[in-house]
Image (cartoon, rainbow over all chains, first blue to last red):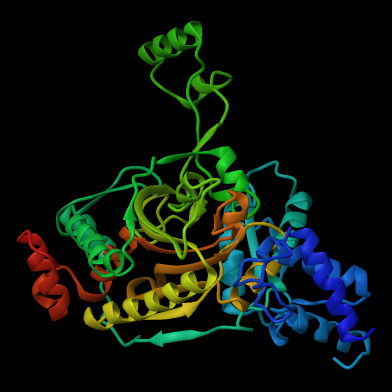
Length: 87
Length: 397
């Protein structure tokens, strides 16, 4: 699955799950999801579960430390590489 | 005699052993003694007669699973480090001998003399340095808080072991008369409460800032947001982990709390790092400001703790306590993202707000200062002594 496709699915999930208004100009694929308050620590657990079930990969604690996963683009890139078995 | 010995895998990290040691306190009320050792790596426990040992083994294994996979040290940041060699001063014994502290129950103390003055001085210092710098608005909070509020703030799903719930005798004339009468004839005992207590609608505040969020419920703040400050006498039940002034059940906490725009909260938190370093340098504290995580007491510990560390959501100023061969956290800087603003519907100019807070534990400061510098103000670092003298004289520290 390509990164852009994964990013689109992630964006859709986050917008729906956290009720982000369409007019929110801060919300981009490169915004820090946690610092900007879109996802909190409890949401992070849900987000990881969404990524694992939707994209069929495993995200370990080590992954969360080793790879930056703070933005939609960062999570999408990690997911794509993991699907391809490159990380 | 050991009733149960459970081996630990591999070469366990010290932080893991510390977490496990802390958590095992809450294993069961049937535990008589518990020892966690590095060499050999194992847990050894002794129980009350008649305890189901196999059931206890399963509980121990549950705690081991909870903590052994946490990637401690994976992301550990030291923002500044001023640690140095210090003489060993038994501050606890010295406080007792001088009657500057009187223990009045598990994790409860009365402070007086220089110990009480130091606590007030630290609070004055916070006011002069931080409250002024951030133009924090004072608020006065009750010491108890609705259980429902704590539930909405997700406290129970992270720290259930800490809670000191509040209850009262039922509004029932017979219950009240009988309780009073039996106290008079038999003396008070816990057994007199059985079946006579109300629901646990309230708890003693485990932290200061929850009141701030519930107080702003449904508010749409003006940019960049609000900064408030308050002190609360907090309670955290710590089982057998209570010790000296390092880990009290009842303690005083001062907080500075921001709720507002993300960039504003993040920038203020960075400024607070600078201020705490200035203070540490000024008073010549042996300490370090480090990334940290909370002791989440639930099976999702690893996920929450890793998240906190990776996002640098918690920083602690840890002061060395040579007599206890450890350091204690006397100050923390926390970033909650939108956890509490979402829980209480707080927005800033229409978008979800974020929050952050700074916290100072009063009694821990007193203990750390006396552990590092002793009991005679004449021997304290110059700036600390000057601030103390001015405070005693009624001036500004």
